[in-house]
Length: 339
Image (cartoon, rainbow, N blue to C red):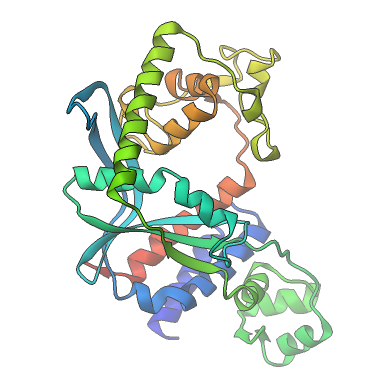
């Protein structure tokens, strides 16, 4: 077995340790295979400067030169790399939406999303002359493990292969005895069928957009302060069922629970997206900004009071995205040049 094959095999084994079910494990294995075959050559020519870096900077009003005494900016950047002498930020994303059409709504939404400007602003404030923000996106398959066809079972029995991939003894034994795909067999099928659903896109940014972002973020900070002082944390009923999923605080807002009940606990005084590095009361992250714009009452509970459910159900999409980010950290460390 080659060194590359051994490294990938080791990564496959970590998929089972990422708190995912068998279907998600198979998806992760298959998508990782496809991702490696699509991007390993290009990624190997980059220099990896940093992984999961928390960057902070003052929040400054560009019109007046005044620096906020209440807030700073903060964000966690997936990857900082060097490409042909230029610094770029890479952000990993997973989605079930169509990403093959350059004009698809997914890309249009990213074009107006502030996350790119957030990273750009943080990087500039830390002396990093970033040239690109690259969205590294994979489209999550909707496929599920299934029964093996007669041809597939014959190939597995005679050749030890599934979709032209050599299988482990464990996978072969499972396929023959059960007649179904386990995570390994499912992953090989996914890697063969989903080869085009990996995209890296650099969306153009301008200095004018950066100035507009700065003004908007300053205004949001002032609105947070105003809301805090007035104690008017208004609800937004339109946000209670975003993406057909109830907000975690819906029970509190509808009067079926109270935020002081034993169903809720205080979390560490930091935004969860940053880890332990930055105090919550001083930091505006992209997630916090989005939360405030979405619903001020939700912002109160999550970021001002720091209250989260004691037994919080992890949504499948979030769970899968977190697992994919973990795999990406490991894969980039193994296959990207270190500066």
